Image (cartoon, rainbow, N blue to C red):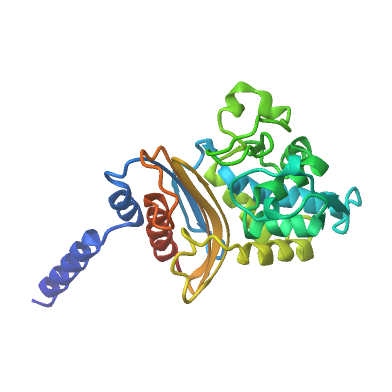
Length: 298
């Protein structure tokens, strides 16, 4: 009789375990019927647990390419080729539309590279990004990415502005002039490589631990928290987001009690243009991020 009870108990346990949805089940439920394509890679940096769906597909970066640009700029400063205190004088010709506030400043305003870098990340400033690329060059960004082993991530050119006021494309890198890269806009990457970059930053491997720590601190100050950081009430998030008419993207680290969850999520091909915080892509990214934090936690 005892053996029968044990067998029945084990059978019940197996049945209950089989009915518990897996992380993959949850992601499929969240993305089923969504009007757009979804690409995901995430990793618990403490346990090594991973989740991947389209993780090695090349995707448009939108403004998330500004994170690799910051890393390359930090490397150039550390090498003495540039200095954070170097000053750049704003011209009317430099101003472009879209995110940021530098275009609101008067021509002749002088800004340091440090100030431009902070603006590029914290408020995703497009004009600041282009002023940095004028000094740094997109080719130098790609050379740096090659040096750290991220060969699918490319900075293609300077930002043109938003869809209401686009300037002619300029500041092309050699990689950006390749037709297969140019179609991605200002940058191209994969979710896996973006998480690899986040992991290197968190491990103190981007230039050195001090510089890496500064990059994390800058990412934590980013003001666009409509995706991964949407409801980050009891944990910190270090992230960089990006948006285009049909795309929302977010790459970042969620510092949860269950571990440091690094993730890169891109939603593209959405049919409706909506730049409100409640864009369907932003809402989906948050739901996926929440599932990843739960599913990959300790």
